[in-house]
Image 1 (cartoon, each protein chain N blue to C red):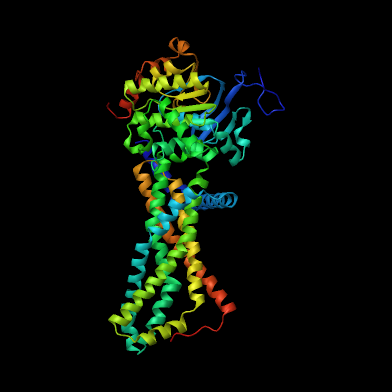
Image 2 (image 1 turned 180 degrees about the vertical axis):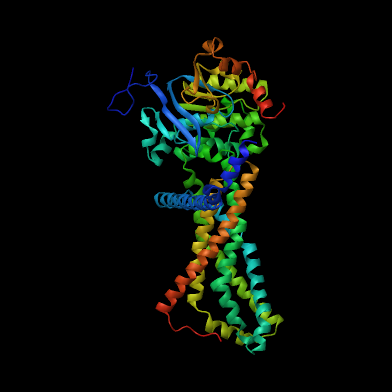
Length: 284
Length: 290
């Protein structure tokens, strides 16, 4: 099944050679002097739903944005469908991005446009379709995420947080992407709406057979939607020789993990953080 | 106590004496490096804008709202500013010219000041405040709410979709608005001079016609293209590089106005030097005002 070979530009010794759709290979990302990701290698096979977990500031969202070329790594390579994103021109990269769907943490809907225009936006930009076809597709996608037709004319500011996220999901799905990325899809939502979003992620995976990456620190969500979970750890708490990925396995394996840092995170225990805060003069 | 002698020694060491000087040199070095980086970044931003503009023009539905925002909605404020500047020029120049018995030359002074300098500069300044800050705040908000990332993630180039239409709107419409400011200033100056100060209309227009030529009008409009481009570039760059939060957006909007204004003045100086040299070269027989 391996597609690798020295001639096609795809690495021979990929971490997971089972036809990865997307891959980070030895990636470092830094902002000025601050290193956020260090030597990250992740291969995402087609059809997999990968959850990336970790505490705030550990580089989860940066990983997601690096995967689709929104951020350029300072070292290492990013591959999508066997193409190295670094080697693509701006125009070719834009073309590739039509194969991604990105659901942003705060939905990132264009607030100057209505819901319908937001969902139709990628189609208007990249497909030659009649207005009636676009309208039908928008209604279909909105129905899939459980939104009534009446929301089409509303502005994003008139919607609740959960509705905005669902519109964001409908917009991400409208181009029928190969890879869909969710940046903290359940953050800020009540438990019921969180579950609705989880169910939508599962339904999307089953109906469209799409590869998904979910960045979250919601353990319920990660366990519910993921086939595989990766945990990142903040570099500020690691020694230079320690790997930043401290767990890579199935949700079942996560529950049996013996790493103290993983156990602390999945059980939501402050641990030594309280002591550090006291030492820094901050009393919680 | 044991540290005291060494501290006293170190305070007299050459390194300690030189440290304020080296710190100051380092601070200047940082400033120079940051300035070079900023100039490089904005040049690259401009290059990418021009590259996208030459490859593919934006669609009508993205261009027209920007034309409306920059052109149509700015008309009233530009017309009002132009009218009052014309009248203020009449008020300020009248007493001095009357002392010399040259009040009928007011038409020449007002109209020349307006079309060559005040019309373009004030129209550009008003637009830097009205349009530049708004552009920067809008793009800054889009940056902090990840709307710009959303555009890029959907395969739309944010420079092509957001910057090129704004750049074109400023480039094309600021000269048009300058003509409007000139016209309203001429009308305002005429109204105040003739109807309030009682200057003879025939002499007023006669002098204006003799001393204000096509070159003056051309030089004002020529400069306004550069002002429009500078306002769009500076404002969009500030918006695109906005830091997080409401404070970041506010700072970007303020910086957009301040840097646009400074750019207008700096460009004005260099363009005037260039235009004067061109005038001397091609049209040496200039009419003398006094």
